[in-house]
Length: 350
Image (cartoon, rainbow, N blue to C red; front, side, top):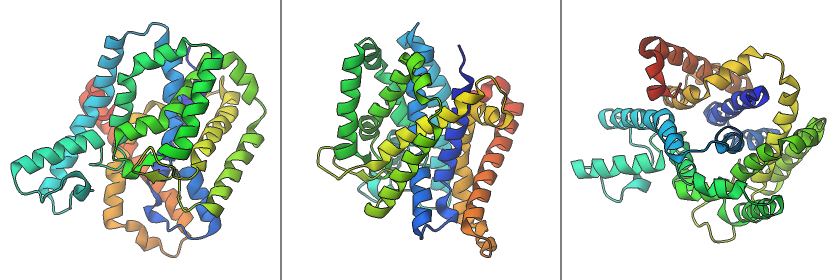
């Protein structure tokens, strides 16, 4: 059974991803700007929640690890490998410095062995383009799917206890890895959100009545947590650190993002039987937008065309960059589909 509201939610989630990567056009200075940034940053959590929900809703009933992984490899891993390789050659052949090179290799890149080591490290971390870290992370999540299958078969009480323990562990100790450099670290951090998505699918008959009519409540929680974070914490979005097993203060953002998921679901559930063409398009093309927008934003960050609009409020320019990145991504995606037909999914995931 297809859930239209969750398709729309995927469309909203990709907008948050693009928006969070578009802050190069907006210097965040005032308190209200920090609140907005804390709501928008770390939108990956929305995708993780959706992925967990659909893991149970779509794949659990007839789960076959071999078929599941083969589809994920072709539709997710292959585009990642191709586009990451193109990105590597782009930096290798241009005058642009390799991103985060000093964190990925301990020597100067001079020999072909250095280039191979650097390339392998980019594939592992996904840091050739700043959005690509999600693919190594989610592929590990797919690989440990048997653990989630076992989890689904536990009692409700056991599942909730596990979520609570892991959520508190993520919030107080794990945090996100610095610069998203460690996919294993990301897995540990995001697992509770993935499990919450799974449980919302398992208990959908109870979950839907629970969120119905509570849009204002969840919205208030999101804004209140964003304000609290802006007042008392230095981080924007989820805080990050290198060591998973040391106390690092409270990560408020992870709780805010869970509330944000419930906020959007409570809104979009009302449109389960209605057609919203824009969100439908964004949902169907979300992976293409994900793979392509980072290239477009990399170019805009290099040439900074928004500097010509210095007399316009930066928040308006920020919205303009978001629209531009999404529109150009869709244009390129449709062009690729027109050329490659159904094989386009191996290049752009759509």
